[in-house]
Image (cartoon, rainbow, N blue to C red; front, side):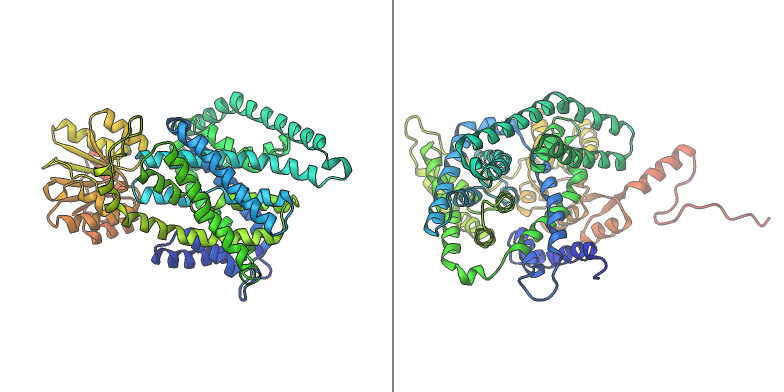
Length: 573
């Protein structure tokens, strides 16, 4: 074990992350909380297994790069512009309020202004991971409040990207000798940094916007999925580390723009799917490494500072967001949703405080306080969402009685519960990828009513443009399946590639209609057995059906399912 510290760190981090994430899931908490606690257990401040913190930090750097690449890949300027009137000024004002509150806490603790500023800035930004999962679980992505929350988050992310660019430059100037502390020196340093960033952005917009999609398209023509996956990772990591050396900008900015440019390609969705497993794995290690930095003694030595920081996160910036949304004449439900969504901090906060520590702008004590407040806020956030869910009947009744003042926005239509479709004797297709589209086109060609269950926003929009009835969301959710009117459906066709989601959907569908014919796809014998156990009537194994089709073209008899194809036994005649 001592001869393989890298392996020990990766294996120990992932195993502990799994154990504590499973416990968090059982308690209906975000897995992120489990990852952080796993890091605390693996860190040097607790007894037992201690991972190599230096190696963990380097692995975390890869996690940061891949996280930022994912943020850039999913960055949608269209979504931001649709809510720019509230998201941009609202997010910037909320960042300013939270930063000021953080600086006020720093002043009370006797910290330098620079340390208070970085600390406050780290408190101001919410976790992308936590917020997006909360939105998806409640099917709020396609609602106005969901779009506002996501747009708000995009503005926060962009502001933090800018902060990550400026912090190293300002940190170097502040830590310099003599002239380094002058306003002129800081201005020159910031100007040079902006010049390098502007050159890098111009190069990415002029060259990268064309070159990266062209590379992906060219590699895709090779037909090699392995090569395509490698190309995506090479672009993400190569751009991040290459521009850091050439232009002196941060790894994070390089990865973010690489993702943005890749998002211009029609293959962006495929690129996201190919990198998702690796991004998830390194993101786990990133949060574990953050947990390793946490010194639990801060809860004993500075409990009041931790509680005040937690108050700023959960109450201070949430009240600021709440008031700002109401000031823009949006419904109370929207204001509460935005306020609860932002009542936590996460990955950008950790990155920012880490950069501040590396540049000598903050102390380890400030980092410990931030980590303690972050972990507590992530644990509290699901409870706040549950309280918001319980307030739904009151909000519904309030909006029914509300009179809209002149010039104000009308109350947002309530997205839940989902209405049950009026279709009957219809075919339900879950998942509208390539396979789902082929099935759907055949169903429509026969003149049968079709209902699609699809989670991908782009596909949902395309289906609605074609006049095809679609229910947006995760098909493995019971409420969504209930809205598909399965008791009166003709058949359910499950084309989801994920065996776990597909199996859960089949199980719930069987409960809703024990007599419903269910046909599902499988990519392996294990998946086939799992789906049959969950209640599918027929499971199509892709490779087996392909073999049957080829045998039919050859004029050969198809073998019984489960019989291996092999050479005929030699004749004894």
